[in-house]
Image 1 (cartoon, rainbow, N blue to C red):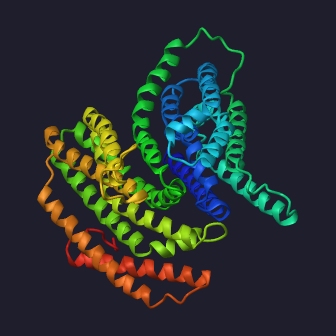
Image 2 (cartoon, rainbow, N blue to C red):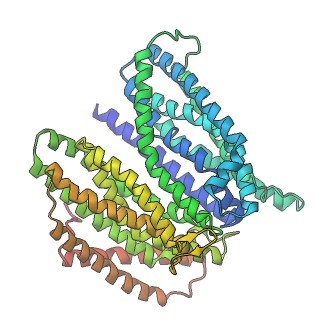
Image 3 (tube, rainbow, N blue to C red):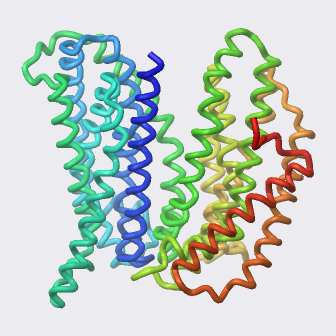
Length: 524
């Protein structure tokens, strides 16, 4: 059993690692090919609806995946195949109808999502959305097949499958470069549908690979008795609907941000690049800090060990802020070096670097509240108290609309800006930071209603000292960077970032140790 567990963990970790690496390389190629230009800006709007469905419905750990795993795991292969086929056909028909509706109303949908985009950008986004609509019915089966494969312990393909779209996009960009180099009359690279078409082809390949694997393990059965297993089928749909609504609430804030970002040229591209840089380390921290705590929380709660529960939660909060405040200081200090090294080449010029590094700094301020909110929400779910965070999700949407509007000048049509403060796209990011901060405060104070008492003043003192350590560290490293600005080669930039990262980590580690807010030990 222990050997099986180790093999599963290795398969998931290795496959996920390869997918993340492919995603990183894809973003580098997109940056070099399109920069923060109108084509990539339009693609980010065109991809909102298909991307939402691919992530929420077709993603690993999405509602479909979790529902299918829960229902199919205890069943035989034959019975599981009948249920999977029934649900696949019904869901595909439903999503196909949605795709047809989106195709014929793509112009209207882009107008609703991005009312302030230029006419050219809207036209490109509409064209790209029409190309992407077949991804919508495909997303349903992809989500179902993830669950079906994992219910039969086929973890590697599920983990690496998202890399297929990334590799396909890289291939399309490289192929377009070759065509342009060999034939000066070719305009394939500037073809406005390139990214959308690459995404569609990648999604289709992913669909074909997964349907082949599902059929190979005997979980796809076209000839089946459709009168059987009605209860199991209903159970899958009962699990999907509320989970989709809950998962979709966080995505609504993305729609809101993009709606307001349409007022600024290149904002959507800049947000995509900046968010990409922040999400990678945040995902690692979330898996490292939060995931191991959840089963422990549930166990302690079932044993009514409130003291142990509080102790583990407080420890988790301290590690959460210790690591995220470090990340905030790191991104603020090395923002220019990171953006230059990862993205600045080809169409991604110096002006694009300036835009994205300011966006990265704004995102960096929100890192501690993002992870802390994630920890608190998971804490509520582990004690099966979901109503309060669910209500706060709705409140967060209202807060986000207000702060997005207010921080870009509080514009009113035909009246202009009501506020003298217009922070542009950075204001949209700070809106999310403020909303997450408010929700964190409310979630923290409400814990006492669940008989979980946090030492708020003591935690606030420690967080303040961690922030002080990060600030001192940032100032010291920034002064060191001033003396090394003459490194122009990419090799020199890599060495500088490696040396700077190690220096920043060492100084932060010893400062937090000195201030007695770091429990991490480097020895057993």
